[in-house]
Image 1 (spheres, rainbow, N blue to C red):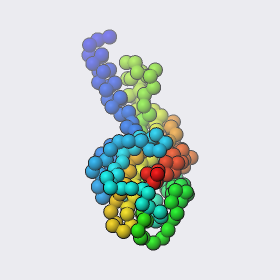
Image 2 (cartoon, rainbow, N blue to C red; image 1 turned 30 degrees about the vertical axis):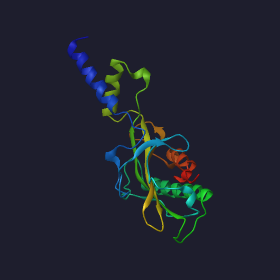
Image 3 (cartoon, helix red, strand yellow; image 1 turned 180 degrees about the vertical axis):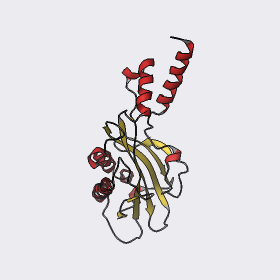
Image 4 (cartoon, helix red, strand yellow; image 1 turned 60 degrees about the vertical axis):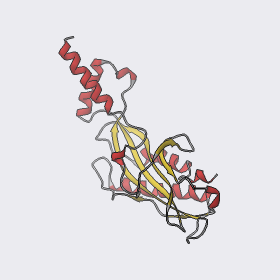
Amino acid sequence: MTPRLIGSIAVMGALVLSGCASKVPETHQYSGFLDSYNDMQQTTSASGAPILRWVDPTFDGKRYSGLIYKSIVYYPEARPSSQIGRQVLDGLLSYTDAQLKASAQKRLPLVDKPGPGVLVFRGAITAVDTSNSDLKPRELIPVALVIAGARTATGQRPKDTNLYFEAELIDSVTNKPVVRVVRKGQGKVVTNAQQQVTVNDLKTVIDNFAADGVMLDLMK
């Protein structure tokens, strides 16, 4: 193998590996739904999933006994693509809202008026997309890297489905956020860039979000 070919393979390998998906959203993937992303710290959710979270240093979950739940929205407005259609986007929003609301009311009684001891929950799906699946160990050989790179260029590599979510808890009296969370969940793998993404492909992600209690695990 010539030095030039070895160099080309090394560059290809670096490019492919740099596309490996992060487990939490990168800063350039923040949507603007939250007023601030300052002091976000990587931690784990109640189920052990990696998340980015900020908690007001004075926050005490035991002070709260009620929750105003605001329905989940898309932010910014969701636009269908060739791989994720309008019906799927609507189905995702409906399923997410139902699951998170059910989870929330298991942790705090839902109320409709602000007052002392009442939190406001607001959240948004900020993106739904697909990304190249991470390379498997058996692919991490020079020739396979070249082949994998060619497949990536033509959209033939398997794709991870991803859902991005941002939310916050607000004190209903002071109207100030007390908890902010930014997270990302990976759903099922689709065969390639042409395969349609379905609601079922992302249900596990949403179920995991709901199991974590939409940040209300901090009420303990």
